[in-house]
Length: 197
Image 1 (cartoon, rainbow, N blue to C red):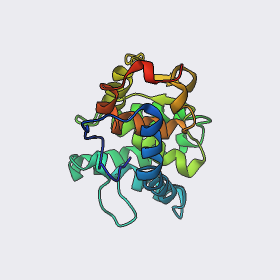
Image 2: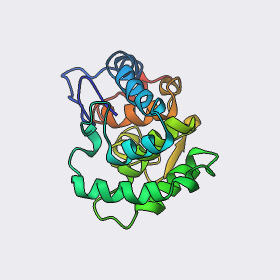
Image 3: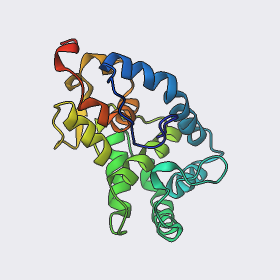
Image 4: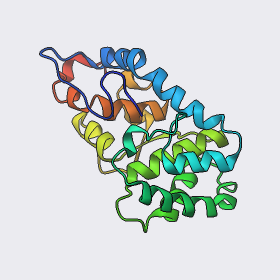
């Protein structure tokens, strides 16, 4: 969710690649606050309906489109909003993030162009209002690349935090998702012997 710098799910490789511990520090300094502020905006919406609407449209507190959904058409997001608003009563029965994510996915899966990143981000934003956070690290295209580049099971829908390198485990699962996506290219150049086992 959002990186400063770099923006979005991209990373720039330097001539010397930092080790994993350093990359985590970089994430904490450059990205963590922005991601936390974004979730806080959804958490503090005036009503659940407002939270679902803003999450579905992927709007920030200024009404601007959030980075991950910037390429989706407004019409598609409006159609997703309509479907998700009708599902509001069902959201209240979700007791964990898995259920929330499945509900979002089932609700909007018929809309072409929406993908697992939209499902995850929307569930994460709605979950912020409901006080429901992921306890696993969910994979989508960017995080899947990061997981693969670290030698993890990139075919899984989600990874347990215990499956990840020790250096990363101090981050919250949703932060790890962000971290894997942002720094995925850096992982290719890591020396496995430099990581604590």
